[in-house]
Every structure is written in structure tokens, then in C-alpha cells.
View 1 (cartoon, chains in turn red, yellow):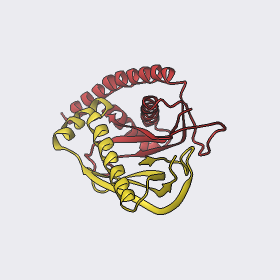
View 2 (view 1 turned 180 degrees about the vertical axis):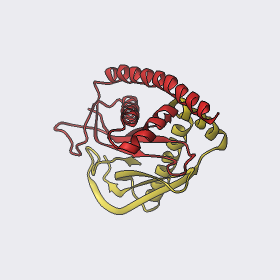
View 3 (view 1 turned 30 degrees about the vertical axis):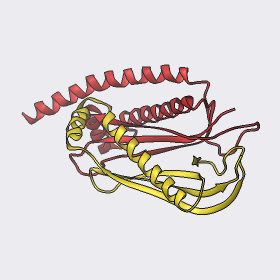
Length: 145
Length: 106
């Protein structure tokens, strides 16, 4: 009985998780094209030229793992090696956070963000039955010409 | 009040440094939202409720930092950094810190 529940949850996680991930990547690619005129640097020095303002801009996102990813990661943890299922999760979260930061910068009329910092936190880690999710926060200084 | 995460504000001169200012907040999760998040844990996807929660909390930590800065007579905070830590299961601490400075008027 427990095995059936586990198999069902894994299958649900696999299908819905895959759909969610594909949609998310599509939307990320679309918006990355949309915001590609905003340049971002993790350098802290001002580029040559006259700049104004410099509000702090940022974007955050919390993304949850799905059941399939967790099962695969659990199995992989026995043998070691790359956890590709979690790699794509973190990649999505980082790119999404950067995009939200860019959207924030666009609202300020900025065309460049410097000193970009990315911060990752796994909220609610530990505790066996806890919710597995990861937060990424991206922030930087927006520059207006 | 100007905020920046680089060590200067473009086009303005720093007159005085007033030392480090900080602000923090600890937030716990909502039980109802937690149940919804539990479902999301099967299907995957963004946890919008948590995104908003952390965003609000970070905003509050920043506000507290700015209050502190205002209190000691600064008109800008530079070199701002954020940090997150999970204190216990189900609660997160958001922390913002930076250097309070006095900028000359434009």
C-alpha cells in the first residue's frame, strides 16, 4: 500500500513537475529576451560616464522541489554524483530572481545594474518531513544615464 | 534616504561616515500557507506565498535599518548587504546591514 502511494506521488511529481519546469524555462527565455537591453555586472566599480541615482533593486523567488526530484535525489545520494534534478531547480530560481531584479530596474528606468549579488537560502531545511524549497534573492545597484 | 550596495552614490560626495547600521526581522510561516506549500512539494513550482512573505520581511528589515540610520543623522546607507538564515524549522531571519553616511546636498 505504501509503495503504491509512493509510486503515485512520484509519478505525479514527474508529470506535473516536468510540465511546470518546461513552462517556467519557456517563460524565463521569453523574458530574458525582453530584458536583454538591461546589462548586469557583478563588478562594483562605476563604468566610465555620467551616472545618476543608483537605487537598490532586487528580486526574489521561492521554488519548491517536486516529489520526483526528491526521490531521484534520495537515490542518487546513495551513489554520489551530480544531482541534475536539483541543478535545474537552482538554475531556474537564479534566473528567475535575476529577471525580477531586472523588472524592478526597468521600473526605475535604469539601463544597467552593477555589483549584483546573489544569495541562496534553503528555507526550512533539516526536519525530515519539512517542505523542501529554495529561495534566491538577487540585488544590485541600478544606474540611470 | 538613499540606499546603495556599492560604496558610493553616483554623482554625490560623502561628507562623513557614521558607522554600521542594521535591521532584522524573524518571520514564521502561516499554517494554512504551509499546507498549500506541502501540496506544491509534490507537484513542484513556485511558492508564491513564501516569495511574498520573504519579500515583505526583507522590506521590513531594510526599513528598520533605514530607521536606525535616520536616528543617527545619516541621509544615505551604502554598501548594503542582505543575509538570510533559518533559525528554527519554519522560521527565517532576514538581516540587512550597511554603512550610514552623510552625503553633501546636490
